Image (tube, rainbow, N blue to C red; front, side):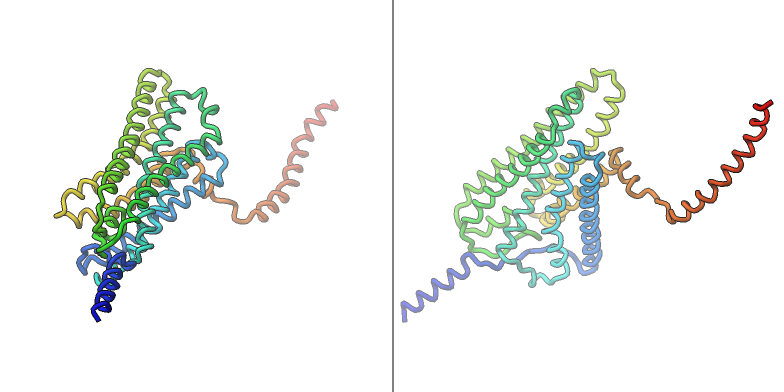
Length: 354
């Protein structure tokens, strides 16, 4: 009897330990604002998907945009789609549910955390390789075609995504190995910090790697931007070529604005983590970190880039509605033109005979 009770106790402990069903804390929204919040996120999600997929498709089909700058830029809309396609639909369904119904499986939670961190990391690495492209184009324009070949574009793209996958893979690998003794995710969506907080094991290694990962990523990202833009600024100040300076200002300002939006959005989330009393603001800021860059990136690049604007205008340029009628009109007008030409040439012919 005693052995049976001990066995049952162990089974109960094993069941509560490493549970595959987790609870989400969700957003603290009053009933009056549930529908407006849902509508805002839904419209934002549809716009992000359509705008980013549309601009990536435009670059792929238009041969005039098959340049290193635009091919590297295609990584950005692709990353925005990844970052929002897994997190936002789940968030939309959770907004309409009661707090007691906010349940997520462990595997889905890990997938959500993986996509979230891939999005954040790739945002930095992709913008870093785009900064390198702008540096070569402005500081070394004569060798740009020789350096930024298709092979180099592929290498830069693979390195940007490869670094992101390796860093995030190790981050989540260290978290998955931990035993879980809690089931509440203190966030509206899953991320690495929320997952390892479920554990009662020693998370010292996780904290050390997470801190090293964040510092290394931010240092290399900010360092790359400062270094490249300092050199670009020096070249522009010393150069008397107005067209070069104008081109540099246009392309670099676009890239810099996109980078600053992403960086500021991320820093707001990091800062709010230090203030538990503002947890509701932190939750919204974490969601907006995905939505704001994803919404603004295609707008900023679409408006600022002359080539993309031209490509869009060619795509939506009005075509003749009834070409067959125009062809018939041309056939009818052709004999009339010939007759008029013959009449006009009559006096000249007579004059020539005289």
